[in-house]
Length: 206
Image 1 (cartoon, one colour):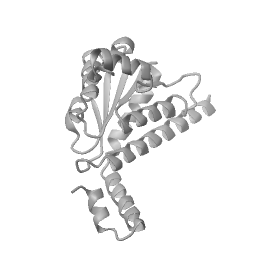
Image 2: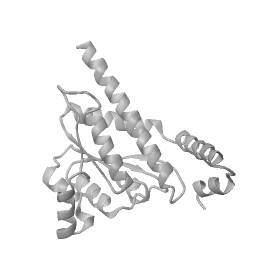
Image 3: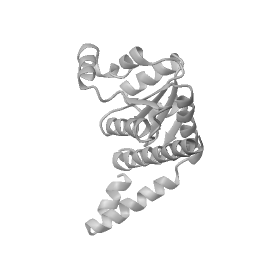
Image 4: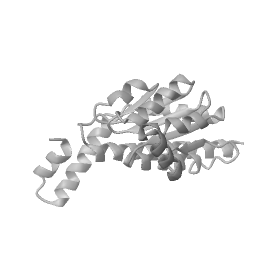
């Protein structure tokens, strides 16, 4: 039984469940490695400086997080004259279904990287389990072709945590998708807020 199930079993009311859920999120947040988060922000700033692209990938809820991340970095940063070239590879339904139909779903991200990725681009792979084949194939391709890889994981981290150059890991129990994806979104807003404020400070100093 994972922590969310235990909270439900112990909660006598919906309010008690909410209190337990928030308490568990706070505990997970307390285990996050802020040094790794800082390194991720530095990675994005360096990609901006050299005009490299930043690709986000993921499945299901993590696909939504990938799209949200790309939006908050590319547009939310308000960096127009020197943009963050961030995009999600989860958003073109025609392209994804064509690749899935013709080559297999495990190829939906790597085939896009073959067309778009240059050396020194950044690939941010989001997977709670860390074991999604299409995500792992994309990371392997990026590493083999000079890309820098970042993984956002949960549970035990899976193969992704060991494969990427930089790992941001939510140390949770297996199957706790909700809390892991919650914290991935908190990371999105944390990173996005820092970049927006850093860009604002940069523009004010100009």
